[in-house]
Image 1 (spheres, rainbow, N blue to C red):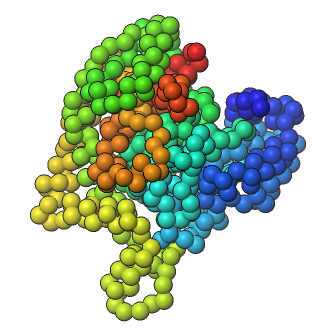
Image 2 (cartoon, rainbow, N blue to C red):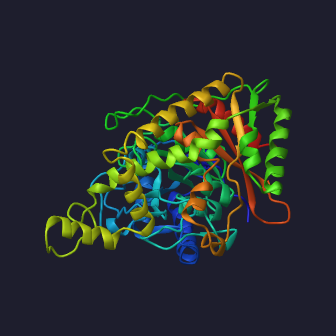
Length: 475
């Protein structure tokens, strides 16, 4: 089967009358209905609703409707609110919750003519690296090998992006690597933006100072087009930032930094070999390869991240008590007894672990020693990146330290071993830096992809996208 059209070419085909929105929607509906029971990439999918959206857009096109995403099918991670559609963030405790509004990111893609396909599967509230901590829905399976993980927490988004034979882009979300990890494991391209570039209005919080809505696509070009649509200042989110169009930048003389600490942390030599091969090819673009050092991020990144993330998660999850949203039980006992019963039954094991650890870290008497100390450490880590960016334009490293693992291998990992898998993805997320992932080939002797991560300084998405796209195009 031929590769699907890029988002840009697909929209041109729609506007030129060569492609029917309804006919294309019918084809992708059939694909999902056939494949989803096998791979579990969608939590919620309503074929009738998708077709109604397509019919409405087709009528509007006849009246002159335009849009950067006209007729493009866009999937939405389950933690991003879609009006009238059950939105659970992968969590049992939100079962039955239907938002009465669209998240700003969803509203923006609708305004550009996109079709909302449905909600993709994720780890409960984003708690995980492998999409195995799902309490609402089934664990998504890697389309390259169903015995392996899609990665987490945006596992369903990456899995479907890799699987589909149709033009598609995915709205995903990252707190500590939840876009980069699944993109790497499934062999698709992704962009996680600067913290604040995309409004978080309508995003179900994991950790408020870390959460970022981003994009996935078959290519960086597709992911970039979607990201540009959803970026920008929003009156509903005081942390949101102004955005500028991502222009094409000259790559000649661009300096790419290789942090030795992260390459040495990856023990899979075959995976590293593919990544280094792709980085070496950057010389064809006129890039210079420079060694850099990020020792503080390599040593303290994971510890600082999990202290901050769990502390903020324990606060954000306090509102889920069985009375405001989703899951509920018949009222009985005192308030504390009722809330405890609901939370004990409806939260998964990983959510309970993070609530307990986060609550401990911010308790009176421990807050200074743990949470505030981690926040101070984050400032040091940001400054280390800033120093590196005085010498280089971008930093390159493997997206993940392993290839997509089998579920049987994941079962043997301790919680600390789970967290340690985030060594490459946590630093840029903790520091709010934009980063991309691009597949760079198959690991020798396997059919599994290896993936390269590129990190830019704050609000340098144009540079990041330009180089990522150029590098992705090199054979």
